[in-house]
Image: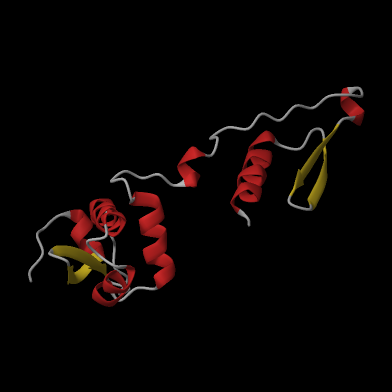
Length: 134
């Protein structure tokens, strides 16, 4: 199959067919599952018209990924707990005069104590990284 001349096609090496959908395959061999496809698979699994094993076999993917699709897209929309996470967290620094202030972070058993003048940009990156660890 010949691909069109879109700039995004430069990343695509071929197409994988599954359940009547054409799934783009990157130059690295990874399939790029469209959101619409995952939503449809989740909806079909929830309705019982498609089993987890059928999706695993047809798509050549792990049960973990199939369960993820079923959980996230069962109602036809993304319903991941990730999308319900707050996008902003307020950090308040209270207490002693500025020269003695510190920032204390605690996340799942990890505790950090930083100088009060720690760069805000770096703090935001650090907090974001802590939020993505399990």
